[in-house]
Image 1 (spheres, rainbow, N blue to C red):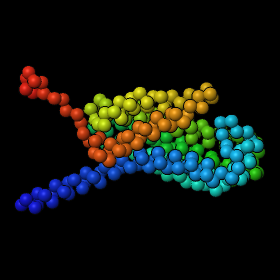
Image 2: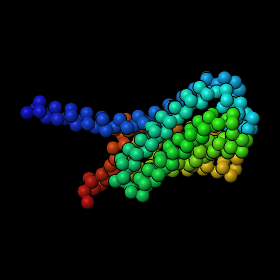
Image 3: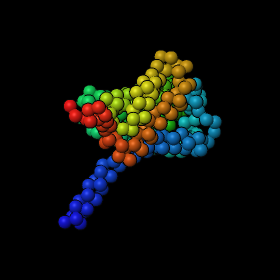
Image 4: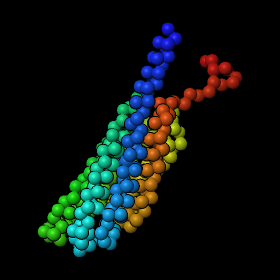
Amino acid sequence: MKETVREAGSGARADRGIGRLWGWWGIVFVVAFVASIAAGSVLNAGESLYLPEASVTQLRDFYSANGTAVLAQSALQVLAAIALYRFGYRLRAALRPGGTRAAAGVGWGSALAAAALLASVVCSLALMEVVTVAGDTVIAGLGKAALVLGGPIHLLGSGILITAASAAAWRSDRRPRWVFGYGRFGGPLVGASALSIVLPPLVRPEPAFRLLAAVWLVGLGIGVLRGRLADIRVSQPSPRTGGQA
């Protein structure tokens, strides 16, 4: 009988372990996105390209000479987009009992962030294909679209994801508390980076906004893997009443 109970308990722990594996998706997103930047730098055959200030001539030169770098970077960013969507999808399901409206925000935010990143990849690949034959207007438009989709729009979705998830988890006393406390303030800052669409100078601190999002994603991913998201803080009974009503 004891062996049966022990085996059942082991099975339950194994099921819980499998149910926590989705926490890896948040970490995979960060690793894949950082690797895409590194791959672009390592495989770059000439001068690096700063997209916000790139001219049509610079776009043509870069995309005509760096096909390998663009392909490697695009593949890693596709992986990052898939990982972010999967992470948001599972997080939405986990938080749904704590607030349907906020959980919906998690779903919409992750979908927007992932879709914008994928669309940015499509624009980059299109640039590589038409860079030698398309007119200046098309080249400039694709470059601008890649910049806006992969930057402000992607970060807007990430900000919505972080803010909505942190608000829902904080209200339901979920852990890790530091992640959700941090997200309540960091999420709006990440989302506010979308203002760079109308205020171009704000594109310069974009790496800092990405770092804010990365810290939250990695912190929550580790918390999920450790089983902390399922923990709900329980208020301690009052010493005077002994916990009795």
